[in-house]
Amino acid sequence: MITREKLDRYRKFKGDLDKWVLSQKDGADAVLSGADWNEIDKLSQRLKIEKNGFASQDYRTETERVLKKNLENGETIKLFREMDL
Image (tube, rainbow, N blue to C red; front, top):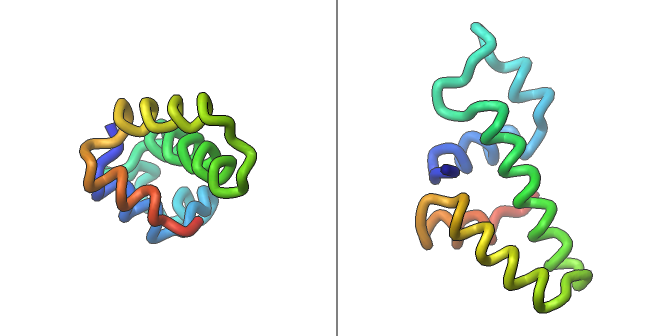
């Protein structure tokens, strides 16, 4: 489940996986896992496709379903949609 705290961490590194990995002193982030990072990346790609006008209505509907399934709550979904990455 993607929480606001995880999104904040992702935003801190502006979606740059290399910077995130290099910032970890012991190789582990207590808040954000590699699987979380990957999920945020995948969800971000869906939103980019929508924002660029390449999504059908079915794709948009599926994106909304996926966001509701993977993000903590409506506030987190709103924050995620407002992210500029």
